[in-house]
Length: 449
Image (cartoon, rainbow, N blue to C red; front, side, top):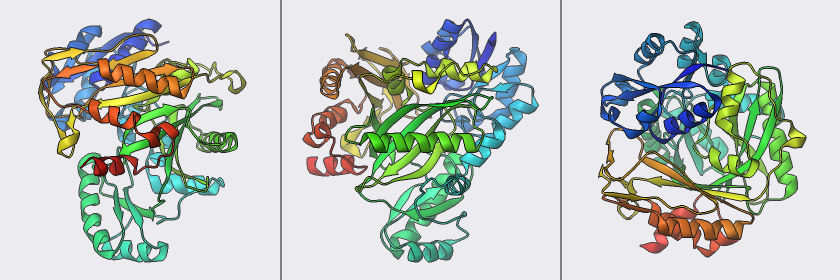
């Protein structure tokens, strides 16, 4: 096992990795920007290094500064967390050339699966269903129009690289396609430093279901079941649960087998997530693979008892996978609510400032992954995620009741948060019955107006 690693991230995920490392006996070096230099979570690391100004481009995305921090602190590996450089194949390649272990898949695998058009081609070659769409990045607006006319509206414009809902737009006609084309390109360039976009047929009334896999460097791959990520707004996930409600055991088995097949086809090694859309008829389609730890990984951990960060570190240092598919057991139900510093009543406008009071929930079955506290000053430079509230119970009904109680206990004052929205979601009759699709939140918000 590694003796000392650097964590190239911030906030709750940095703290999550620090905690896993402590239990494995690994020393940690955290990086920070000048905006985070007094952040409380840094005190949990064995050391920390400031890598640049508040602007993420000059700190958390500054590869030369991060590599320099790694070299002066004498670490063996870098864990990228999620976001920032976590899916940057160039960063992984720089780590490899610097004899630093990148805690993630090999750079060549990341490069292939990070390009959604290439990933879809690989899936198709392995007879995994894909959504019809362009087989390469779009050259210009006319190319986009030609593809859209061939597919038929509505269509979905997507960034070729990255995720998180950025660079994604639904178009229902030529006018909206032309307008969305330029917007999607700009968003992709800003978020991922690559303006490449492509088009695929938009699957209406769909569910978003993903499969967690773990693979080692010796060809061993297991899945840890699926998560339901249907509750989202503008393609950004808000609430996740495991297992997915209202899907058949056959569909669950078929999706998980497809995820394993794809991972083996690309010789994947690390933790990863294979994402699918499921239509009203129960047909599933591969959409992308996330070559990193997911924000929503805790719900899988709760129902399987597997620590995904520890597994990721073990694989990265060359250990064989200790998990075997037949021994992976899933029990109970877990739900995660992402608590963001946003105002749902004001078009989800970011809410920055000082948290005057933070009183977390507790009790049996409640887990909170967060780095905030009373007096914490939310910086305006980064993602609005304050933390993840996770519950675990024997049944979905009990998990929802537990989440309702935990949300009612969670007090954050001084800024606006998504806590009230989550309460509305989990008490809605459609959510309670599992009758949801990816437009559920938009419908809910429109009804509240």
